[in-house]
Length: 429
Image 1: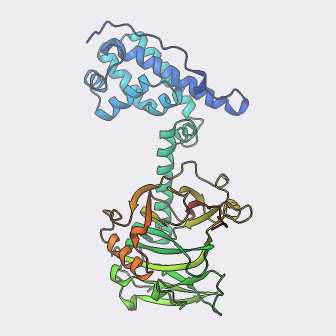
Image 2 (image 1 turned 90 degrees about the vertical axis):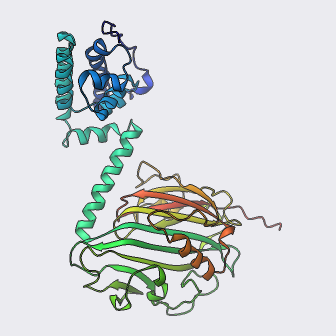
Image 3 (image 1 turned 90 degrees about the horizontal axis):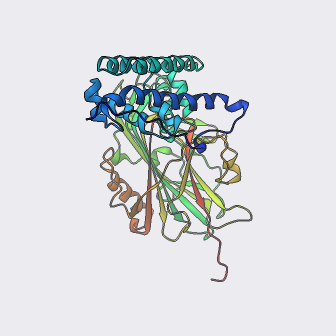
């Protein structure tokens, strides 16, 4: 390679990469300028050794860097956005090691001195963030989608692990499905059939008995227009044990207790079950009859279905399963992650209300019609489980569209909200 090639100064960065000038954005302008200076200083330092536009392997070979460092440095030297350049940049200590390596490899002394001056500026800017590089990445996440995704994932993991320690419980997988079925007795309503559970739920320490499931106690039979919490077989019996899918779980009957709480009966695990770090699997199913609107009503254009975890899990799998005769505009449905219980949009049913909503929106992936592709590595028996649910609710699973969303480390306190655009009713039929 040509070690005498001259470094070419980059053109001015497009204005679109810079925020509007104003007192609230002074720091972002400073970060943008730092990103540009870091890129130019690294080019002046490394390109005399590698030639213009070096490949990661070239950088790694000349500077004796590992693959990760070489790729990050390559992206930092080639990207156009100053915020992405700064996000890809190693921390000042890492940059110092790179500068030393370049100097040993024969890079010009003046280039090394200039790079150290920029690195010193970088150190000063990091001191403005209480958490150093973590805080900087948080600030950059507003401008760099990859940074936002990484920051959100790291934060969710930290919160989820913290909740596990506080609650003394953790599951490997949480599964929730909402099967949307036309109501039998009311053609303007939709039933939600839920099949859900936890895989490898463990106690981290002896503590309070966790609630596995709760069922409403009815003092009277609901009317035909009233929502009703039923078993999969349409029974109003409030005993939550009737909701358990025993054949897909691992809970002995004596490990469960029933406790009244207001108008609910709560099914909890016995205080001494399971033993510490002994995994158990729990699945249950129920029908919430007449709980959703089928068609637009007055100014209400959407319905919402919430999936809110009560226990932390490493992997959260959410399936939205829609009957072919329902919600023709909801394929695939729109999903958001929100602070559960605090979002005004849950009252207004407007999906454009971003209050209390996380930046990134989860995506629903279509699995086709039927449950042929519903199995997942974490739950190999899932297709058999759902087949048993469809048999009990007297529906053919091949009449349903299946959409899946998988989220890592979604902690209690947040909910996945599925937004369902309502069809307009055709009264001429």
